Image (tube, rainbow, N blue to C red; front, side):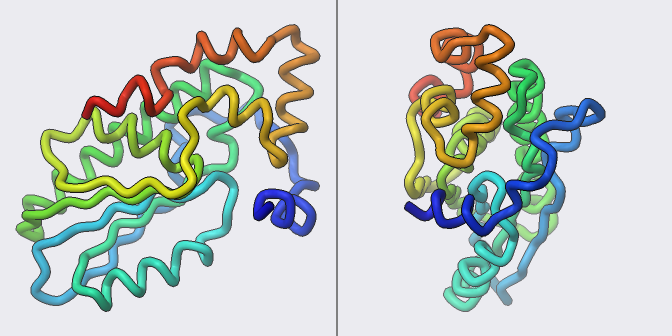
Length: 189
């Protein structure tokens, strides 16, 4: 329902893909909000194609509750017609997140790490969790267990699906190519 509303008023007029996009552009912004005298870190993996204002209130609330917060914004092009670029985007996110967390653990003396995802952010969370040596809890809100199926059936991804479909891809092709991104494949972490 929320996807349908956002799609109706959102940025659907923007281009569906960009030939100059590469996986190392997957993160458009990472912000750190510090809670005084806290050794806890909450990392927020946002939904796809949603402005940062949707996670800002969550960030503020977590800081008031005593947690440092690291929030990411992802490039809307992490989902696009080039299925290999999609995999590269999520791999880049995982590496960047693990490096950022390692830096914060050392610099801010973090002892507790909580991972929080919203919607498609669950895919990024699971892939990143595999790269982390340690985390304490995971909260996944409205996550999917299959990126390809969610992409194929999604309201806001229908234009991309139609482009990929016209190039000869089927849902089963995407499921095979993106199998290692699925939370069920990475949730062992």
